[in-house]
Length: 91
Image (cartoon, rainbow, N blue to C red; front, side):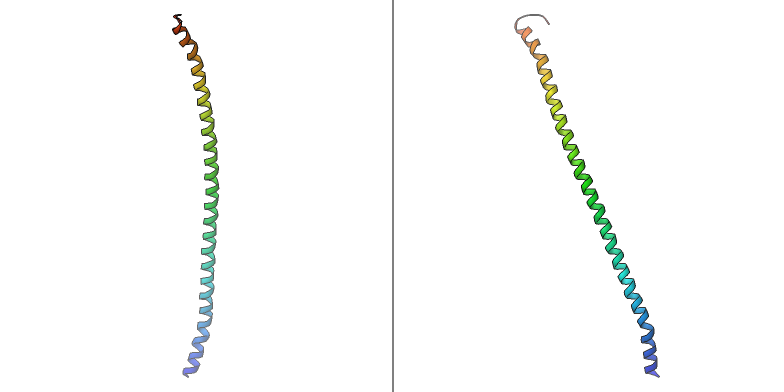
């Protein structure tokens, strides 16, 4: 009777064990997919940040060029004023 009970218990335990392995496999696959999605999101964010950095650098360079041109224009406007002061001519 014990052997029959043992066989019966083993027969019942096999599907439960197989289900447990299936659940474990599904959980592992789900975790892997979640990590993959997270990795893809991080890579997309990295690309966005690199593009933002590049755009910011271009804008900074344009601003520097604008400031240099503005400075040159101011210096050019000061030049006649300084010459007239040196010659004693009123402005």
